[in-house]
Length: 317
Image 1 (cartoon, one colour):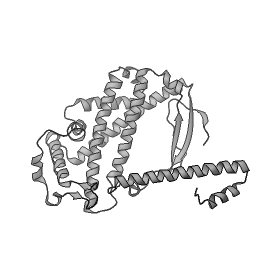
Image 2: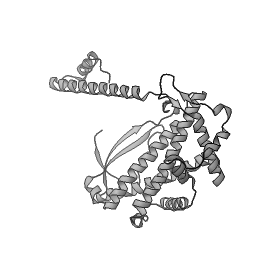
Image 3: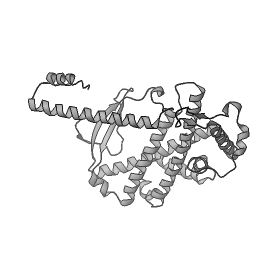
């Protein structure tokens, strides 16, 4: 799609009100290199790091959504799905904690917040105040998960949790001829018994409440990052004389989680080889199409003849 220059209001994000609910409009906003360089050094650092943090939170949220929904109801599938889901939710909590530390260092410590706090909306300011109170309280769930269960392993005694293993949890899985397919389920259950019992002992919160709190904090922090980033983008567009070069495309949202689940039993070595073969095939196809483009341009032939040549070469569009 050809690029077009369009004036965009510097106070509103692109909306998709006229698009059917079954489709999503995605705007590709091209930012001027010159305008980006006109930001202060602290603003450039903030823009780069918040972009990465926001992308990571968004990616983890999508992966967790898929990881927690298995399409096959069998004990082994349920165990593998539960393990990967618990792993990802701990990593998500760790990333939430690190994103807050990023805001502390790059937003508050640099005192850039004095300028941007008046630029963002009331909701963003309220969320920032809430985050300060939440992470300022000792023993909050996100920090506990990060410090003892996600990025670090606890120094506490965990062997006592073995006593709470129920009969159908005392097992491990190892692939008969595929060692990469393995799940040490008994240890996983014991560890998470320790995790949730210790959190319940100190906070009184059940596993479902722990999950809901992590999801809530991830949503609040993602909203803050979006608001801050959009405020910076608005400043960039003002430095570009309020002009943003945009491309628009329409995508269809994923309707079924069954089509987007994370593979449970995949051989990473075979998968890597398959990906290499696929890339070779795509490169060959692109090379063939490029040669045909040059051939057809030289001959000046019609679209019908072009399609005939593609058919003879058995290249599918």
